[in-house]
Image (cartoon, rainbow over all chains, first blue to last red; front, side, top):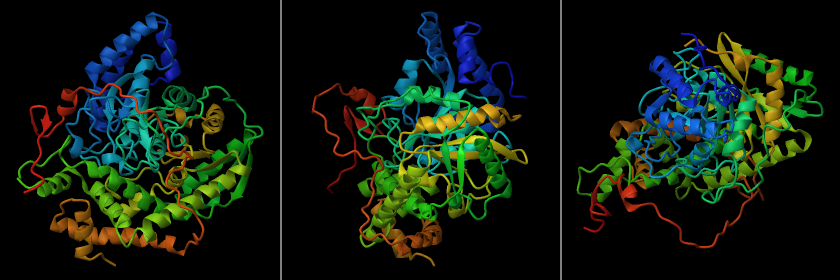
Length: 489
Length: 95
């Protein structure tokens, strides 16, 4: 089946124009997307819970908003939410047995904001359990398939969000990114995926993985759609004390067709050993196009701390995760092992049976790094090297407006290829991890194909320079059409 | 290199997480592989470098303690694995 079935290949703007001009109602549009899900999701498997009834109710309300002239760009637009964002009255599973039947009593702040804007949620997207993974193979339920080649992974952890948008099951999606979990799957599924500055988007109601690294962001068809979603979800939130108080600009302003005066650095450490030559060639070609658009490119930037980011990340993230996941003790919500009279046995069995292998591995890693005798050598040391990584970025951004790198060293790999080798799996995030460690914004945009498989380009910016990143992405997408290519699912 | 059985059992116990024999054996190897990769950090000079625990420079976010609405008890208890009336039911902490 080709993707261009009627209206299931729209950008947010195109959908908005059709809705505003009353050429289609949100209920009709939502039904088309629900039908699309029925037609393709048995193969792609992007969605854990299809929220048909809820979506049609929301679509009806959106149509009322449109009729009363209160439509904004997201009103009536079908979208997917990664299943680690709390949705009141709708299961939020984190793709874990632990939360398989968990129904949140409240909405995440991003969900409240999308509701107010009138967006229509058609489903909750599959992910690696607790957002730990790079392929969705760690989902306790099923693996999502890459719409470009169903035998390959969609990336992760926001693999369901990326595959869902890539396969035309929704117009946009939200994901979360702790070490690359929006950007890497966006690169693998040929969509635009944005991790904003840490604190730019409220984390209230996002199931915590690593609290100093987690950030919510959009997965969209292109940079302009990304700006439209950012306009709705960004901003300070009283309920998240780590959310940033900086004013939120209109992210669609300032997008231009040329990049005159823009200074871009290419850090050589991101073109790692073992990188596929097709990826290397595609990214270098894309950079030459940025040059042609007027950007001044320095091809010879060095960020020597880059190779240390992997170790820093895999100490800090599991340490924070081990603290965050201690709450799943089977007492207040989630899976609980009840077949014992012993409190300790109940707690131990709850975790043993409720968590999957990768989550348990990270809990153990975190406990090891934080345990007496190892704390200084691992956790404290990693936090100090984190400072060095951040300083190196700060120094680079005194000279450059943005840095450009590949999103991942390879195209999507085969399902099962790395499933038994955690270290190999971790390496697929080497280009994205440093960005979370430094807390700065980064995007992945489509930048080419190798043997029919998508290649993503990462653009990294200064803290709160989301506009610069979107500007570069937008200008690039005016002269390329990689982002317009669709898979045949 | 492999972690010892005791080390793996110790860190699982710190997390109050049960672990099977097969899981212990797998963890001994996989965790050691990952930990070996952390060794690179030892060679980095971090003298006088302060640790970074979060990346934006917020400190001590304070607010007035104003009571607001709470979620209805029934909504919260709806997810309870075990309950008795309006209470979460747990196993005895003291024998």
